[in-house]
Amino acid sequence: MFESLSDKLQKVLKDLKGEGRVSDTHIEESMRQIRIALLEADVNFKVVKDFVARVKEKALGQEVMKSLTPGQQVVKIVRDELVDLLGGEAAPIQFAKIPPTVIVMVGLQGSGKTTSTGKLALWLKKNGHRPLMVSTDGCRPAALEQLSVIGRAVDIPVFSPEDVNDELERARRALTQARNTGYDVLLIDTAGRLHIDENLMVELERMQQMLSPKEILLVADAMTGQDAVNSAGQFDKRLALSGVLLTKMDGDARGGAALSIKSVTGKPIKFVGVGEKYDALETFHPDRLAGRILGMGDVLSLIEKAEEAVDEEDAEKMLEKLRRDQFTLEDFRDQLRQIKRLGPLEQILGMLPQIGPFKGMDKLKVDEKQLGHVEAIINSMTARERSNYKIIDGSRRKRIAKGSGRPVSEVNRLLKQYMQARKMMKQMGKGFMGKRLPKLNFPI
Image 1 (cartoon, rainbow, N blue to C red):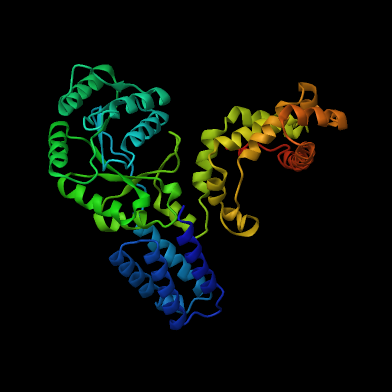
Image 2 (cartoon, one colour; image 1 turned 180 degrees about the horizontal axis):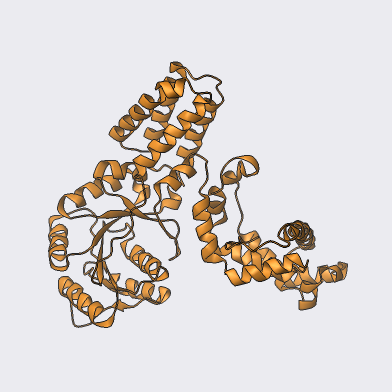
């Protein structure tokens, strides 16, 4: 995410921090490089101009120039201004005092509205709500079926009356159904076009008047850069947009849309899609993204992912095994499975602060197939071998390799890694002896 911009900004700020004293010349050169980096990231020209001007004004202030650590002060200024540029603080979903809350999803065709509707429904369900989905996209024949397929995948109902062809009537009936059956959120997947036209906007305006939605979220493709920003502006002229959901953020190496959209439209980014899976939707936190862009990490998001993926009771049991030095190959396999549930490993490594032992971790290229190979090797072992690695001699290693379809060298490497991990975990277990278990336990 934002790899190109992140690399350039980190280099500029690293050079600045290395200076014992920061002069006007240093500031001017740094601002020039930041300006170029933002423009190359497809950030709106006016947004870049205003951003650089604000940073420069604060960086040339007396408090910075006379500071013992002027370079670090400038880094803080850039970070704070970047947070403001991205929206300042997270903008939560606004819920109606009397349910159901109506959320209308709008956007151009191909932006990912239908999939994002399913992702948001799953996010709402995980956060204690009872969502109902309905499609009012009569322009695309497969839209109704696509939403039904997504509904079955995430186990969330889709209102789909066969006797109603009118989009507005279907939305009205869905609202009645939600009220009568106890659903507290109604998500409406609307029609899209290849471009904004009058018929589309009139239809959406009528829906807004009829349903009085609490939220109208624009679904925009982050990888389209300023096109996403322009479409947001056009939708906002006709509809009371409450926020933006940016899709494909995980594939956006530049970041122009995310860095421009709040300043240009005044509408906050509320959610970002960070993968193809239905649970790959995250609340947008400007401060966390700014930290990731500048190499400061996003530990809070990593903790939240760990809390979702790791069962606390299982973690307690695992810690007890560490205390007793009973960490087996089966436990090793279970820990790998938990790590896989956190999401793509490269994304996880990108959340670590790029300092100390974590420096350069975001640049690591991880072959996630290797985790599958490790699991296959452990699955090829007998229960006795998994519980007592010491009995795995040469002949057993050959049998395990044959059963898993992997070379003996990989079996040997796995056993070596397991013994190293076991040794490290034994030391960690001793560190917890006699201490109260923490509420949060990370996967190992």
